[in-house]
Length: 480
Image (cartoon, rainbow, N blue to C red; front, side):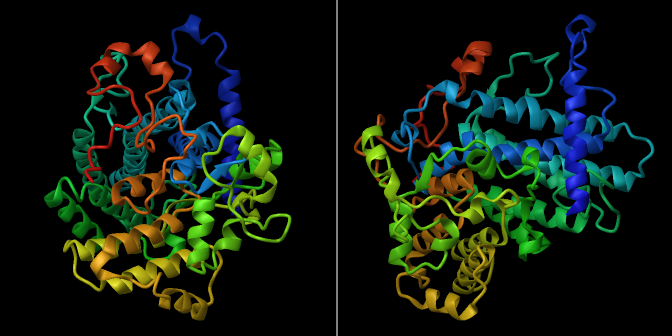
């Protein structure tokens, strides 16, 4: 952990140095965001922090994703829980994905490919790490906005205004990219000797994460491209996926406030108190006697766990905000990890893949293991308590209605990871969430708006993107 902190602090100081050296770049006709002398290790660290911090950020995660799935309610100025977003709401998110994190990955690929001091096996391992991260990032991007720039990105000389690709074409490209990245890995040879915050250059873990990502991509396509989904899911599981908590894909935030968990930064450093647990989440967990409630939230002033009704007017919110439970200290601590792909998720995918006939196995056992893995992730290790939870009829696996069993428990388990919870809610349609009476839209948003920066800088491509810039346009893979 000390090495991780050192890597991140080195990155932070380095990035300040790069920023301080950008004055006058316009006169030199040099792109300050594409420095040529930066080591690939620094670019890797920078990309990993930038992208992880974004996925766990206020703007994308708890002010959007966790509201879309009604895990959180807003305790101040509740317009976002009434679905009152506009294109400007997504400017910073779009720029951080494309101009920061993804751009750093592309630059690191160029530096790595040109590094003659690496053996072929190590060069390929390093490229595999970067390519897997690229695929993970691009899947998040397309799942947020649906049609986005893909085939013409990161080539501004030839495509200064990149076209928007259809999501089905992006997914076909991601399926090819993940296979190509995995084929480069040599497990017996290390990856990056420094700078890799996730796995420290351990290629066995990168291989398992890559296979797990392959499963996630395949399962997302399960209702629209069954043959491709079956191949990807079966191959991913056969090759070996995340099989324990320590193999999970998570970002270890640090106690230094510059590198801390965004929940901590927002609440403790920023002194913000804008979110509570929603009544939808708390009521669902209480109905299931769920022992994770104290791990998810803090009791209110009366010592009770109470969710704030979702999607209220500002006046209603102000009147009730003192009665509701806030997110837990566990979730909001400085060093709480950002869980981006977990053992629990893979067990849920396994149960679903068995039910769909993609792989062989016992779906009920995989489901039970998924719930147990989620419990352990949140600090509940008492197997007797876990077994008692699963023995309740409301929580027991129902093979005749497997989508409801898996969807409901996955919705709970993905608490904290708002964007992935939103993606799986859109795909599985569980639980049934209601549109608030005070909402400004007639349905729960199923995509984000293309940002104002794109509407202004790339208007022709946006106009030809395939549909209007509305939040009710379903992803290609959401057919139910």
